Amino acid sequence: MTYGTQQCYDIGAVQTDYAMSFTTEPPASLFTGTLMTPAPAVTVTESGNALTAGSATVTVKDSANDLTTTPQTASTSLGIATFSTLQFTTSATGDQLVAALSLNPVLSTPLSLTTESSAFDVVAAMVNVPSVVGDTQPAATTAILGAGLVLGIVTNASSNTVPSGDVISENPAAATSVTPGSAVNIVVSTGPVLYVLNVAANNADYGTVTPTTGSSYASGTTVDITAAPSAGYYFTGWTGSTDIASASSASTTIAMNGTESITANFAKIGYILWIGNPAGTTSAFLQNGAPYLTPANSAGGTGVAIDSAGNVWSLNAASDSVAEFAPDGTITSSGYTGGGLSTSTALAIDGHGQVWITNTAAPFPSSTPLERRSLRPRATPPEPVRQRALPSIFRGMYGSQTTEATRLPSFLEPPRRQSHWQRALPTGHPRPILNAER
Image (cartoon, rainbow, N blue to C red):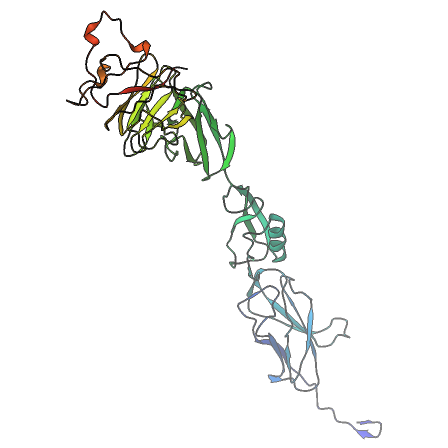
């Protein structure tokens, strides 16, 4: 049989066996958004041998339709088609690749080869939780969303160290690997805990307290508190809390470890005890023994006496001077050093307001009693007339010293019929030098 000018021979039908299979399988699992590694590959064979002639186009898709581009294609080279750009958008379990090769696409019923890969899992890619502690809440939200995560539960809590509106903590912690879309919970500061300090006096007429009651302070704050007694009253102590540094001190502190309600207690002064310390000062003490005051210029309190007006007279033997103080310690007279003082050892005030001094040095000065207010000499000096007895508090202080006859002020002279007052005055006898009456 000839075809044109060529001789042709009928040798019968030729049968060809084509096959295709995955020779490089997908990995068992991979993360979303990452390339499948190793890249899957299929091999096309003809009658058991690789199809080396020409080139064929193989398409591939996955059974879950999660490929970013589907289907994808690859051309065979020496019968092998490699898919190196496969990437998945969402997670899937048990997914498979399906490769197809069309053998005769022009036929009404095209012939094609298909093959499936082994199963694999697509896992969402892990992301690290950003650090947002110390950020403001808006800044923390932006960072969380930017990492592919979502803002979870937002709770508020007080803090003495983190400013109000800033993030105290986050969960999961920063740098933790989580799947995209995971929630991050944050705790936002509302600022320090505030506690109220309630302060009061046991009686508003007895004294005042500071600070103003009802003020609020941060937890742990140390607050100064002061109790100021009114005139005629004294402070006895704080009550109401164990957080007061010194409950017996009028000026102290309290630690705000919670809401506090404290009371400054005052009591009326019943009496004041004045004590003269020759080696120290003249000081006043309350009836409970607590120190009340120590006037200025009261050094060397050899003797102490109080006149009918409540003024305090203090003798300083070291300097032979007498000072006078008001009941509140204010200096009325800073010191009398005139005649009538000679190495003095004791001081007293009689019922007529005369200030008496006991001297140990002889001879006794011959000065006259003086007015307390002006400290001016009296107009009439004493005249020697007869011997008079000392007030009983001074008797027997000078033993067998010689006597001296000096006229006493007229108001001290007893009626003449009381002859038992006529006794010898010892040398250096106490004399009234000042008038304590106002």
